[in-house]
Amino acid sequence: MTGVPQLVVHRDKELMAQAAAARLITRIVDAQAARGTASVVLTGGRNGNALLAAIAESPARDAVDWSRLDLWWGDERFVPAADPERNAVQAGDELLAKVPLDPARVHFMPASDGVAGADVEAAAERYAEELAAAAGPEDHAGVPAFDVLLLGVGPDTHVASLFPEHPAVRETARTVVGVRGAPKPPPTRISLTLPAIRAAREVWLLAAGEDKADAVAMALTSPGELQAPASGAYGTVRTLWLLDRAAAAKLPPALYPPASA
Ligand SMILES: O=C(O)[C@H](O)[C@@H](O)[C@H](O)[C@H](O)COP(=O)(O)O
Image (cartoon, rainbow, N blue to C red; front, side, top):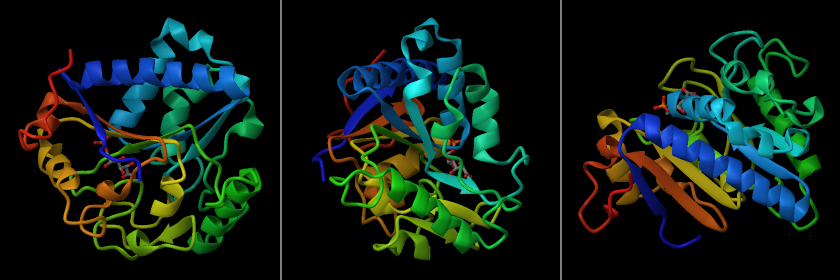
């Protein structure tokens, strides 16, 4: 693991989204300058969507070579492709339809009415194969070393579709799993596992609002990833918690960083 997670606390969720967007644009531009391409794993949820909307509105978005960006998803609701509940549909509305991406580099998780069929385990396996095909010889986890992997944090400390005490959190072998009986609807989902998440260079966790304060405090002073899956999400280079003040309010004084703007 990468040592202590870094915390950045913003005034409110709107500023958090703006700052995270600026940060992500810079990270993508830097990765493309260094290696020619960049890879980002997207999350669902309000904060992930607000980040994408902020990128769409940023003049700096034109600094990104969108045709050399690989996009993946950390989880997906296993519903039909056009369902507005799908994280991919929401990401499309906020950003993907507005920038010149290479469709071959946009790696949607399978939908329940897609070519992988209605069996969520088969669909998860198919996504695992797509990830494995994109992994290089040095990527031992069976997935690429993503530049940035974004995760929204749920009020129960779930990340992706890894819910506390759920079998998917215990997965150590597979990189992608089908999730049934998720406590948050819809019940059937596809999710990266913790080992796949930990292959990312940087993991950025997003949480805003007072309803996240307990979850943030628990995950950062955690009894363990089984009870608090967010605490098991970290990158090989950096783990960044991007918070607003309300979400940071219950952190112990030793962890609360100097207030950012
Ligand atoms: O699949 C889902 O149900 C959501 O994607 C969910 O996992 C979300 O990312 C977190 O609950 C954080 O959500 P907010 O950013 O809206 O707080």
